[in-house]
Every structure is written in structure tokens, then in C-alpha cells.
Length: 246
Length: 199
Image 1 (tube, rainbow over the protein chains, first blue to last red):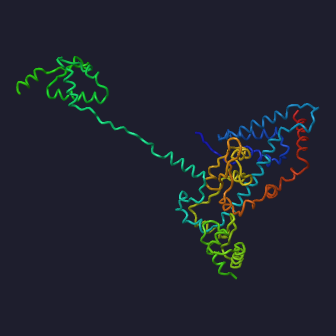
Image 2 (tube, rainbow over the protein chains, first blue to last red; image 1 turned 180 degrees about the vertical axis):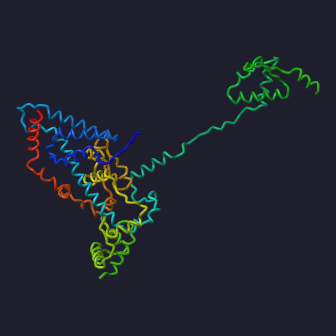
């Protein structure tokens, strides 16, 4: 079984480095890079063993520390003016000093928050629970309006156009067409009939016309095998019969 | 001795949702007032009466609040709201915005050494977009809001101690090491030492 734990002990690599610096009473302007790198990597290793999630920034700092360590080891030419040589650590030191400042500011805000949270006023009452922040518009700025506009536009129903076509085709008409197709011929292939049809609806209506003609016994259909094309033939006998009756 | 004006101001303070400003009071009284003096008198009166309330100067206005001693009891009234405290990372970000405003997100990230989300702080109305930096990409600039001042019990952003003062407040213990001599000179000397040690 594996556990995934996220500990928010250190806010970032700078926070972690400051922790070592404070703990070991290191002079921030003279950081023993080899030592601190070792401490840092040990910590990362421990985090890894505990299966703790490590932010990418921690790894990035590890590579920076190792690079610094290498730079410190590389010999420098002696004739170079000492003042011109920049300490490879300077950048890191500046980052740490800057971060330290805001860590102090952070502590101050924490104290102020604590102090102020002990004061209560009439409007921070329970009645506020039902207060809907969405209806509170006094702090709306251009950005809010832009976002609200974007949201509304995104939520708009897409305009949908439908074309309504009047069917210029009906069964009676198709029946006439079928009849005219026979014109002296005794039988027609179904596929041949369908070849004249321009769209699905015509096919459907023509098919219905065929069924209609079968029903009134004007034609009959026959098929030699299943799924085969079928023949539509005039029921001469039937029509004669009908005629005879008439 | 409290006058009628004091009483009116007290009533206005009692019923105001946002910190009450001089302009608002003058609008209600239809005359100019020295609100700071009136508030002082009221606070003195509350003090004499051992009243559980006082008037705070907040976000360039005034608000009637309970004294912190009564927090344990008043807090129970709001039990369901819980104790909402800002997270460490939110506070860190906020402190950078507060001291360096207007500031871009990239600047905040650079100082913290981690990437930062400003979404929560924007949602909580502690920071706001104050404009854009005139630089390629025109990044958004962030600044604190007047609610920020209210939240931390400040009257104005100038009330925050400066960075130097903060150092004096928070790290008296490791203050000696950094005050020794010129730091740049020290770095170059130390570097030589470091070399000798490593090689």
C-alpha cells in the first residue's frame, strides 16, 4: 500500500535553505555550499523515501546548488583582480536575503491577522451567512465586467438554423410516374425504377407507391433470391379482371 | 461630555457596513465635522466606561468593533464560520504584493522561488488588478485592496513597518553576523577561503 502525503512545512527551496541557515547559525553571506548542498540533498532524499511529493522547484534548486559547488571547486587564474571576480554564490545570497525580508513581512501579517481577528463588528455577524457575494457589486471593476461578459457569451445558445422544405412529392404522383414507366413494358427492375430517384425521400415515397399499387393489385413483385433485385410486373390479369368487373 | 453630534456619529458607526469615512458622516450630518476628534472622544468615553467596544481606524475610515478581550465569547457566536486563517503561501504572496506593489506575478514568483497562484487572494478580495506593466507582454500588475487594510487592521498601507524595521522586529538573534563590515568585501575574502578549503 502506498501513501501520498503532502507536507506544507517548507514553502519552497528558499524556505528550506533559510531553515538550514538558521538552524546551523550559518552566515547568510558566507554559505558553505558543499555543506548546505549535502544537507539539502539529504532532505530531498528523505522526502523521497517518505514518498512525499516534491515540487519541481526543489529539484531545480538542487541543480543550482550542485552547479555552485562545482564553480567553487574550479580553480581561478591567480592574476585576475580579486575584486572583479564575482562570487558564484552572490545570486543565491541575494535571493535568500530578499526572501528573508518577505518572510519577516509574512510573520508580521500573521500577527496582524491574529490581532485583528479578535475584533468583531456588527457586519461580521451570523446574518451574513445568507449574504450572496455574487449580488455584491460595489467592487466590480473592468476586469470583472470583461470576465462576466465572456462567461455570458460562452453560455449563449448557439444559433441553430433549420431549413424546412415543402415536400413536392406524394404517393399519388409517384404512382403516376410508376405507371408511365411501364409504358407498354410488362415488367421493370426495382433498381431501374430507383435509378430515377434523386433523394432519399423520393425513394421512400416511390416505395410506398409500389406498396400502394400492390395493394390495389395493379402490380406484383417477385424476387428470385433473397436480397436480390426484384421485378415489378403489371398484373394484367388482375386489371383485366377489374376491368371485366367494371 | 458627549454632544448630540457624538451620538449621531456613534449611531452611524453602529450601523455602517464598511469603515465609515468623514465624507459619509458629513453627508449624513449636512455639515463639516472633525471626525477624528469625535472618534477620539468616543474612544475615551468607552475607555472610562470599561466598554467592550472601541472604534478602530481602518482603511481610511472608522469602524465600531468589540475589544479583543471579548473574542473568546464572541467567537462562539460565529462557530459555524470557523476560524478562517490565510495559508502560509497566501500570506507570503500577500506580503510581497503589499511591500512591492504594484507588482507582477513573475516578480512574486522570483522572490518566493516557487510559482504562485493569485487566484485565491483575488477571490478573497485581498488583492486586485491595478493595471498593466508597460513592458512586452503587458503583464498584469497587482496591488492590495482596502479590504486588505481592514483584514489586517491597518488604516493605510503606510502603516506597515518598512523592511528595515521588520528585520529589527523579527531577527534580532541573527542580526550580528550580517552587520560585520562591508559585505561585498567579505564575500570575496570568503570565497578565497572556500577555495583553499575545497582544493
